[in-house]
Image 1 (cartoon, rainbow, N blue to C red):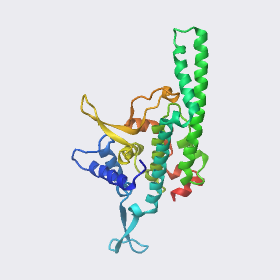
Image 2: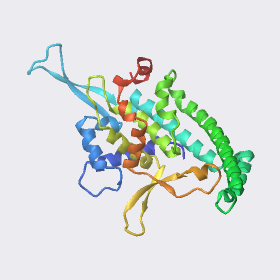
Image 3: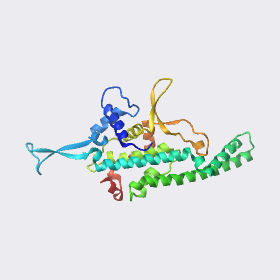
Image 4: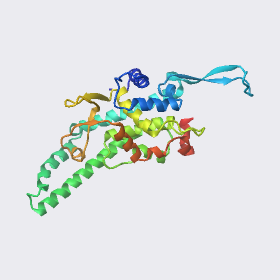
Length: 304
């Protein structure tokens, strides 16, 4: 499902709007009321909803109390060049995410060699149990490690191609900045990488501005990442059959663990929570790179 800007904006704005009301929200599990208060405090409600924003300025250089005032449009909503840029970036990020999901879900059919690896791994796994001799266990373990390394190498090569496609919208971006989204991390699955890319796009537009203000809290960036899943139809609400509580689960992906990477069956759908997203982002220290003040001069061209 390609990124649909119209559908995204409708759900995105509706969720943020209802977060500022006292009614029972239909968009839950993203800490909406707290995000709304934080965005309102920072004066970024119109900007984050891609709606026109104006400021009242006094005419002339000397500002006096009885001086005439005029409203100046400082942000043109959907038609603003900054909005158009971030929509293109969102579209690229979703396309990369969906391409990775498609590739992994059809891995065996797309590349017969990897399918063979998976079959061999499945046959070797029982030989690593304690029922076999130590000699057999050691040999089977070494072979499994070789298979895992080869599949990881192929996966890294594929991801590099996807990342190159994603960063095509940021020509000249330094290697140091790209590390925030491309650096390999142990136990990182597709959704963790996707969350990092969306947070990367939001973080430098909503935090640490040139005038010295910090903008929104980093926790709100994590909240907006969760909302992005819902607004872009990449996740849906699921009701727990036992206690009737609602939770957010991914639509396209399933949690990929170590066994799944070498061909075993995938496990349960990935649950998306603000706390988990926040931990993923802080693990790679994205919270320490909070805006233009922390961006090298060579990387600031796309933030002007």
